Amino acid sequence: MEIDLSLLHSNTVSEIDISGSYDIPYDYYKNSNIIKLDKIIVDGVVTLDDVSCDVAKCSINGNMIIPDSISLEPVSYPFQIDYDDIISETSKKSENSLDIFQFLWENTVLEVPLQFTKVEDLSKFHGDGWKLISEDELRNASNPFSDLLKDYDKE
Image 1 (cartoon, one colour):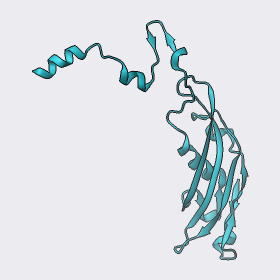
Image 2 (cartoon, one colour):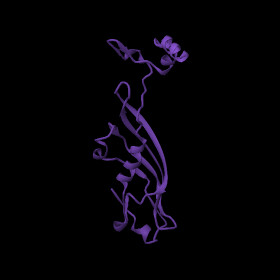
Image 3 (cartoon, helix red, strand yellow):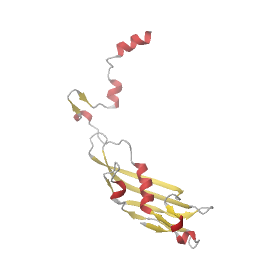
Image 4 (cartoon, helix red, strand yellow):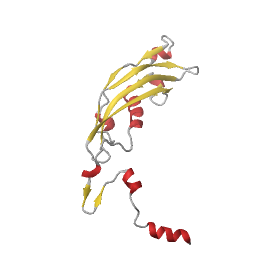
């Protein structure tokens, strides 16, 4: 969806309201770690700065469904972005327009966590000769090589 910036560039208006609710098309996130992206709520405006660059000042809120890092089950991950920067990369000066989906996607993809889990009980994740342990269990566990390490430190 293109936002017309011609009134802003001709100094007819001082700002353009981009507030609204937007659905990012599936094609944007189909090759990412996002399973589903709910409506994104934007509250903000586009203005011109002193050197005629388009500046967006907005708050972006949404919810994405991503796979849990441990169980791989879909989990909800809410996000909130406060954006206040030049948007020259996504606005087309010659066309006086802003592709709002591209702008929202570029900022949303930065919020996708590398690892995220809501699993609290790790005891059900085990197999033949292995089990998943927490960071606390790792710190408190005795190291079977600790005797060898003591001898190594003496040398």
